[in-house]
Length: 54
Image (tube, rainbow, N blue to C red):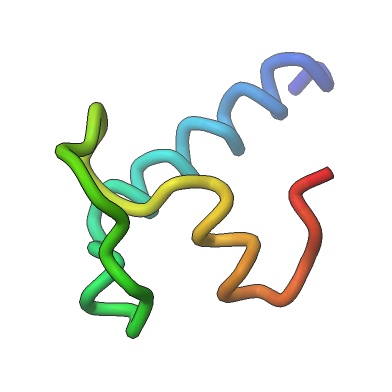
C-alpha cells in the first residue's frame, strides 16, 4: 500500500469513527447551533485525547 492511499484509508476510518459519537456521549459541552456534519469535530477528538490541533 502506498503512503498516500494509506493516509486516505486512515482518514476515512477516523472520520467514520468520529461520525458514530456525539459530544454528549463523550461528556463534552454542546456548542451552539446546528452541526454541518454528524459526530465529533476534530477539535473535540483532540480535546478528548489531550493533544493540540495545531
